[in-house]
Image 1 (cartoon, helix red, strand yellow):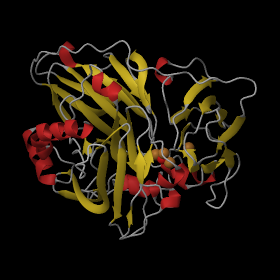
Image 2 (cartoon, helix red, strand yellow):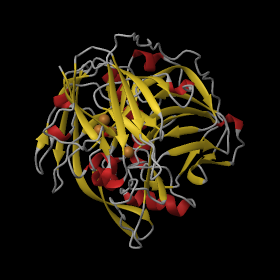
Image 3 (cartoon, rainbow, N blue to C red):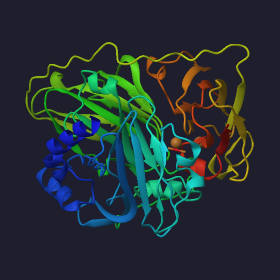
Length: 468
Ligand code: C2O
Ligand code: CU
Ligand code: CU
C-alpha cells in the first residue's frame, strides 16, 4: 500500500525533482543563480525503492566523491550519496522490511549510521560496521517506530567529522498510519520540505576550509541549506511543513522566521509531539531534528521573508501566489506514553567534560575495545547527563544515543519546554546543567553514545553500551 502511494508521489513529483536536484547537479543551480539574486533551494530527490513488493523496500546508496558549485565559477570538491553533495531522501514505512545496499566508492573507509533508527547494533552503521573502499554493506531491518524525520551519515573512526563536512548526510523519513492520516502538509517537495542546516568555511578558490582543530568543533562562517548558501524558496500563501535537520558539525541554530513570526512545531527527533507547540524561535543543536509548520498566508504576495539564526540569514521565502489552503493543524498529533520510573529505576551518570582534544566522558576517551556500560533490553533507566562547567572553559554539548528514542525527564536549569516532551535521540546539555533522560532500549547490540559536536566525538567524547 505504502509503496503504491510512494510511487504515486514519485510520479507526481518527478517534474519537480528533475529541476530540484541536489546541488552539484550544478547547471540547475547556476540557472537559479542567474534568475534570482540567490540560488533556489535545492530539494533532495526521493530515493526510488527498487523492490516492487509493497512490503519490502530495497534502497541503494553509494558514498562517492563529487564536485559542487557554492559560488559562481568556483568548484568545490565534495562528497555525496548518489550525487555530489548530501544525498537523496529515503522514505520508509513502519512495518516494512528495508534492505539497504550501501556502497563505498570513496578511497577511504566509511560507514552509514541511521541516526534515530531503532535497529539492532549490527545494523546501526556505527564504527563496528565500517565499509572498506569498493565494498558493499547490506543491512536489512524492519521499521518499528513512529513516523519521524531521521537522518543518516558516516560514523567511522577518524573521519566521521570530515566526511559529514564534505557532504555525506541524508534524510530518512519514517511514515506510519498516523502521519498518513493526519491533516498536515505532506506532499514531498511541494508543501513538505527537508531543510538540512549546516555551516562551512571556504577558501578563496571555493574549496572547503575544514579545520578539525578548532577548539569547540568546526564552526563555519557560511550557513548552507540543503547545500546552498542563503537560498530562496518560492512559496504560496499556504501552510508549509519543514523538516529541519541540524546537520552541522558543531553549530547550534536559533531559528526565527521574519523576526519573530509564530510557527508551530509538530515533531521532535523521534516523531510527532502530542500536540503542536506554538513558537517564535527554535533552538536546534547538532544532530537534532524538528518539524515545523509555517503559515505563509499571513504574508503579502511578493514579499520576501527571511529565516534567520541569530543575526545570520539562513534562507528566504518568496511569497509567490495566493492559493486556497484548507488544512487546519490538528490539535492532537500522536499519543506519547510517558515512561514511568520509581526509586528502584537504575541511574547512570554521564559527565561530558573538556574542550578541543581534551574531551572525555566520565574522564575516559572512546576506546573501541572497551564497553563502557551494559544495560538489559527493555529495562528503563535514568541517565543523568552533565556538562562540566569550569572557570577555564565551559560549553554545551548535544548528547546523542544510538538505537533508541528517549524521553527527557528534567533539566536542572528549569522547566522543560513543551517541545521537549516528545521522543528524542539527541539532547542539548548546557554548561553546568544536569539533564535527566529516561532510556529504554528495544534493540540488542552495541550502541554508541556521544557528543554530536562531531569534532568532540572524533576526539573521544563517545562511549559504547551493550544492550543484552
Ligand atoms: Cu548522528 Cu552517532 O550519530
Ligand atoms: Cu546516531
Ligand atoms: Cu561536545
